[in-house]
Image 1 (cartoon, one colour):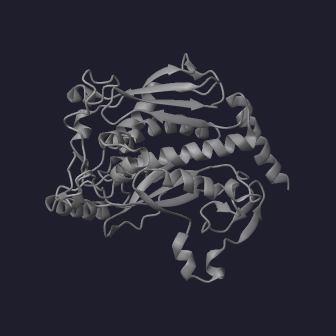
Image 2: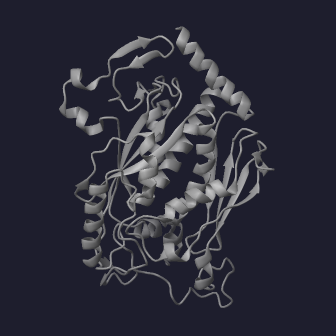
Length: 388
């Protein structure tokens, strides 16, 4: 007990996505409707492609939840792919009757994708095997798992949220507060700055007309996360290391920073480090949060703040040069249905990734077979910090 793990399976155009979440304490309230809300948020956002008009993601909870509460057993989740019906036998698990490779085998790798690397790694002749699993469609399963992790964190007063801070060259300077979240969710780009959002949408329109794509930066915040989670004793136990691994495991994410991040390298120490104080009833406090809620690999009790950089979608309507596998002849890359910009959706996926990492870390720290025991452990430590 005390660790949260998850696995996903499924292909982009297969029958379904499947996920298993293990280690969730018993007694947590879990509703399919709440998971569906996050799945719907993942499908929204200015610049999304045709696939989002086909799918209406809905989760089916098949195990680990009874009468609306977790039982302590592994939680099994399924998200059907409506688009699977349009693909016939393309992804059939059964061997072809004639034993031949499919006539529509994909042999042209797309630059910026896992196509070529995956084919070389697994010795594949048909890139379809790579395309289907490497697709960001898998993130729907991660979002479903993340919704459970969010619920667990909320049981101890922590809420994980996100907003878009840049798309292409257009940037928002708004510092997000919890009160701003409804405005973010109402915005087409999930941006807290209405003027910046309008500029971002215009940039996406320009890129779309040119057959191009845009990336951007998302900020994820965890308000109310408990102090004392993580460790300095080994590098892989540092909280920022766990979070960075989770964030960089998300498709198209190329960088991550915490608090001031890279800008701290340009400032003097007196302008970077957060002064300490003590307040009756609150205990030790930081006079700022330049550290982003983590010092020495351990959560401080301040809001955890990280930003993730998403590269532009690699599938372009105006194709880049490529090479056909086998013949090695130069050809243009293939185009598969795609987005112009998926940064708003990336924020929802990153919320899930961060929530899963934080829930795992806080469970390892405080344990508990039930949500009540888990919450009591967190609260006892918070009280202990007040007495130090």
